[in-house]
Each structure stands twice: as C-alpha cells, then as structure tokens.
Length: 135
Image 1: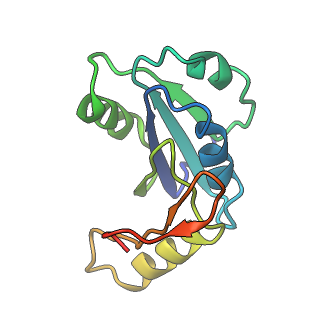
Image 2 (image 1 turned 180 degrees about the vertical axis):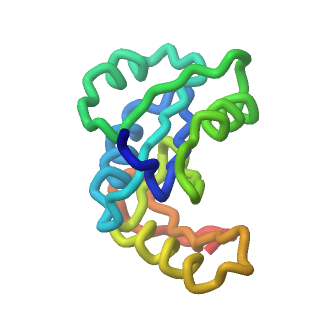
C-alpha cells in the first residue's frame, strides 16, 4: 500500500477553462512532490470534465460534489483528502514552484501553527502583475 501524501491540494472548479490547465500544472510542477491534487468539478459545462479525463498523473483525482456550490465542493475534497496538510488553490490561480515546499517547511518547524496563508499577485490577461487593493 502506498503511503499517504503529505499535502492534499484542493482545487474546486466550475467552468474554469481556459485557466485550469495552468493552475493544475503549477501544482504538479511543485518542487515538493509528495502531494495529491483533488480537482472537484462543481458542474462545469465548458469542457472541464472532458479535459480532466485527459490527465494521467497518478497524483490527480477528480471528484464531484453531491450538491452544487463551493462549500460542498470543498467539503467533498476535505472528505477525500489523505494528506497531513491541506492546501487550497482556485482554478484560475497559479502557484510558485516552491510554494508547497516553503509552506510545509514552515509548518513542520512550527507545530503550534494550524493555518498558514500566503500573499498574492494579480495578473492581467498577458501575465503582467497589476496593482490591486489586495496587494
């Protein structure tokens, strides 16, 4: 039996194409590789379901929530997660290659911490960083 992954990445999606492939690839290309990616398709009608069927990486699982909505999708992912840590990513997000390695190292060094957040950069359609009230 394969040991469970250290990190379960929950990636809910509803009509996330064309951004979803970049989001998934940014997780699969992490320097920290002991992970699983749970893609929870919340009723997409844009070809997401068909695209998910093309994924062959064994770390990826596709799930379908029993009821619609983000909360239900996340609960479905949490119920299926096997990792010691759970990470969140949206279908239109991109993770830096060392995101999970840095987060796991930080959490491992601080066992008294239960939740960790990150900063974000907003990009325009050409991939250039733009200012936002969040930055």
